[in-house]
Length: 302
Ligand code: 13P
Image (cartoon, rainbow, N blue to C red):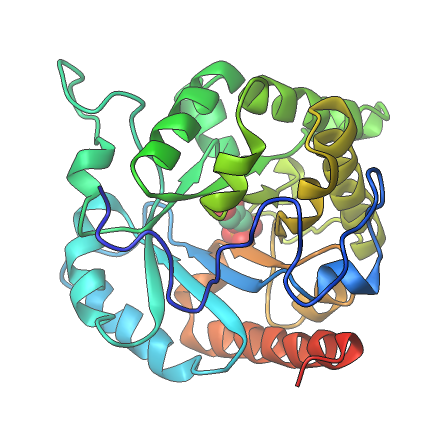
């Protein structure tokens, strides 16, 4: 469906083995230097309900010009009506375009909805299950799972968002909630198909979104480890869990992204407010490029 299913910078990883590295036994996860070096660094901009088709193209072009760094996958996800302007502005710039949602059916009587077929030629990525859609559009894990299946079959690279509410974290239930969200959306799905489609997970604690408050990098890394553990053990993904990039989202800025990327289990950011500011995007992508170089050196990749 989509004209290019992946950014050219993203090699799709063979299932069950890892580029430039030995295979890892079932259950191995987390902070292995061997594993994280093969996952890409990703900075994804979620513009939410901001920009218009009059200004989105120029903003995207400015961000693209300010973020030309090797080793980092850049994605911009504008509102649906700005997709064509952003796509046109990014031709040849090496920045992928993503949608913020997609319907699970391809066509039909769904007033106000957008299908994967409609995104063909406009977007190659899609954000799914964002907490704002769980909250405002009452999206359930089951529905998000259907959208995920549609994204994969349509050649869209999905970013699945998960994260707990503040009350859930305070009650010590954060890992349990996120594991439930993963099981709800992923149960019965073929890990090989998901990994082949470049499946990405974004951990976005709801209480950190738009609040200026972030998770600690240690808590975010612990959640990334728990997410891979859920995939590997509960969902039977085995070592394929290690090849899923996990992003942190929630009040990420150029000033704090370094803390998150200092954690080997975190592979980038899903950024809201700061992604509308070219200076901020420049800072975040520059830091991600530095981390990409360091991880490649640690791994012996030249
Ligand atoms: P903020 O970066 O504005 O907190 O938003 C995060 C987010 O929801 C990205 O999807």
